[in-house]
Amino acid sequence: MKIKTAIACVVVSIVLMAFAEKGGSLFHVPAGWPVPHYDFAKNKLTQEKVDLGRLLFYDPILSRDSTISCESCHSRFVAFTHVDHALSHGINDRIGKRNAPALMNLAWQRSFMWDGAINHLDMQALAPITNALEMDEQLPNVLEKLRTQSRYRFMFERAYGDTTISTEGMLRAISSFMVTLVSSNSKYDQVKRGEANFTRQEENGYALFLMHCNACHTEPLFTNGEFSRNGLAQDAVLQDLGRFAVTLQPEDSFLFKVPTLRNIAYSKPYMHDGRMKRLSDVLKHYASLHGQGVHMNNTLDQLPSFSSEQQVDITSFLLTLSDSTFVMNPAFSYPREIIASLTKESN
Ligand code: HEC
Ligand code: HEC
Image (tube, rainbow, N blue to C red; front, side, top):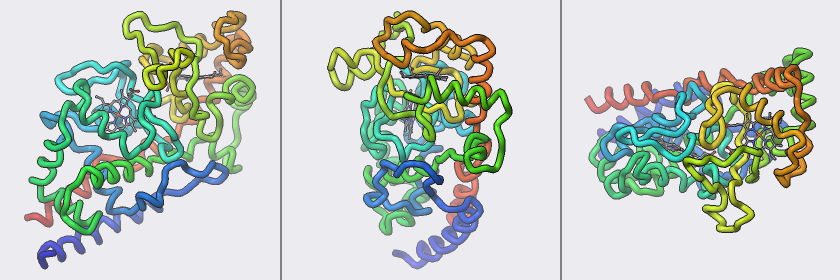
């Protein structure tokens, strides 16, 4: 390592550590939550990798014409989903095939994408980078572009101890940032910790939720991680076969991953194709399943025809899953302070 680089490394590290300390520890398992699925032994979490991953997540350099970053479709203020788009919009405004999921608590997730096509978080970023409707870039080009930038040579060296910029290093850094996106400070969590109380309406909604929704949207993650049908009519336009595309088992047709309901107030529109704009649409949908008996799913077939009052109660409970400290967390924002400290060093 050249002396100048070594000194710069120390200076930037001190500046960034000062920021990191304000944000608290990188990752912790909230009380009462299960053991994460992500194997931290294979990708040890360090502030340096998280910083690099955050820089990459917000950098359109990963797309063919440097216009689209991960953040284009996964914005912090809406719990890392796509602002107001039913289907994601990628390069040249090409319309994708599905609604961008909100990103949080990914370390507990066993499979990714609405159909579970990806089973390891470290592989996830490859999909949008190479998808023609999203970032439309090729991996060798991405690596080449990163290698031409001193800021990336520097950040890779800081994260991995040498200037080699490899696919693996890039993917692990992006994962490192993504696993830090933990949301566990909603009103619901505060109630569970004894720091707040539900209103009577929220309490009623919670009771209904436990009875009718929790089998699939299981607390504390608000998903059981399984694939399921929730009684939506098939979409005539997209004809998305869901899980079938992965397993090729006919019984898996139209199954989609049960999405988390945490931060649901931020992450509209809803469902894999974004067909529902409001939570009230979702509640009306579930209430309409009553007595249909066509879903071959006991939980769904036994749903009552929720009264409008019950729908409002459930909605008020769902709103307690909003975690404003998550969407406002400066550690997850555009990495202005990292970029500023890097620019200062290279001048
Ligand atoms: C053009 C919009 C777009 C861009 C850009 C994009 N994504 Fe996504 N992302 C999506 C969509 C749509 C899905 C769901 C795809 C599916 O189910 O087939 C998704 C799914 C995901 C998931 C899985 C979440 C889950 O719960 O299953 C992760 C993680 C993710 N994206 C991370 C990233 C990262 C990292 C980048 C940048 C390298 C990125 N995305 C860029 C639209 C986008
Ligand atoms: C049998 C399992 C199951 C049950 C029971 C169930 N859901 Fe769902 N839910 C799903 C699946 C699967 C999806 C995604 C469907 C899709 O996009 O095709 C979903 C989607 C949702 C969404 C949209 C989430 C998003 O990010 O797009 C909300 C909100 C929701 N459910 C709320 C509820 C409520 C409230 C109840 C109880 C009244 C409930 N669910 C009961 C399986 C279930």
